[in-house]
Length: 257
Ligand SMILES: [Zn+2]
Image 1 (tube, rainbow, N blue to C red):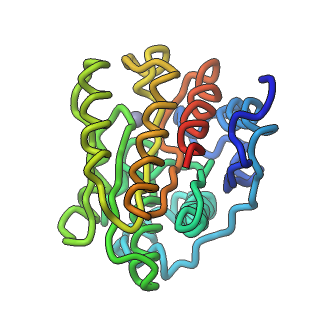
Image 2 (image 1 turned 135 degrees about the vertical axis):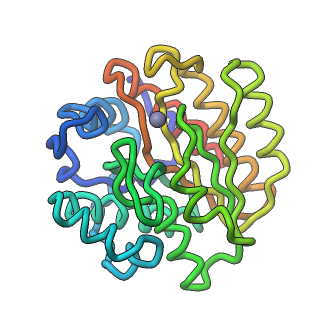
Image 3 (image 1 turned 30 degrees about the vertical axis):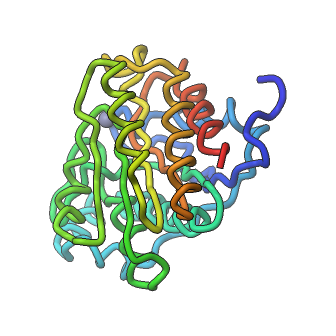
């Protein structure tokens, strides 16, 4: 891509440890992270992801669930994703940031995991900020094609959280809904569960690449208007031919802070 349109360079939390496939599913596939890095590498600043302390994971997941993930030998990579989400959220308090992490998290509930997710990265990050007194409240926008049931299971009952999963599968209505909802958000931090499988060339979706730029922009505008922070973390998105460009478009919008 010519020139940097993500300016000043956005901080992207990442690790090359995320490169190799770690399980037999499409979120864990070889080449998925490379497809994103290839597109955004010259326009962002990478920060090395660090493992989440187990206490931060246990703050949202039952001990049996944590033990189950350990037995499946998925604990190490999953705790790196959770740690990366925490770092991203911390940076997001002062400037827009993105967590290029996997496994994804939004289907992971208190005591179960589904849909390629093991630990709920977004819930772990928000709970950490809350426990440290860095935020009073938060808003989570989940733009993955699939409903973020795990995030709702973990955080949905707290009065300091609000979660929005746009439901329409009609492009124009979906975008109108997101724009309207974001125009009313007024919290300390906005986190985006950024799945890109709603793209028209991904998982039978309907959004265009340019739509991710708009969504990123509406998030950053909401953050600026309300004096809050904002960040996104990767969830789904599987077509390696378009995934990098969709992430790039989202970051360009988010960078308009
Ligand atoms: Zn999905």
